[in-house]
Length: 142
Image (tube, rainbow, N blue to C red; front, side, top):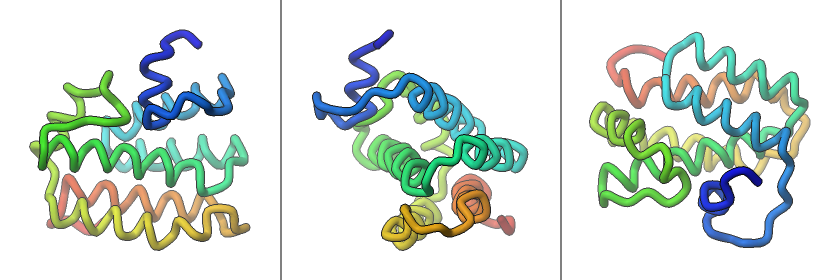
């Protein structure tokens, strides 16, 4: 593992996890995309996850951790999962609409039980990422 401290943080400090380099690379691309919330990014992220044939649970987990850090930084000045992304999270936290951030987390939590279901992953992920975009543009439709 190239940077074990960062990888450990991504797993919430739990020292035992199954490390898959390809999955870690995709997660990195996903996080980089979340750092630049645009419509084009949403479509690119959903396509990448779809091509990798991941269950919806995986990107839901990544997005939940990202939102946790975004809310944690905004409300308490604390980052748990992405300490290497502090500058990006700080910028996004200043721009984020808190009410919409909580609605986005709620939408993720409602869909989480279906993470292993055979739902159309790309379609569901695009809808979730549109909710994420609303966090930064609350007055605009997703």
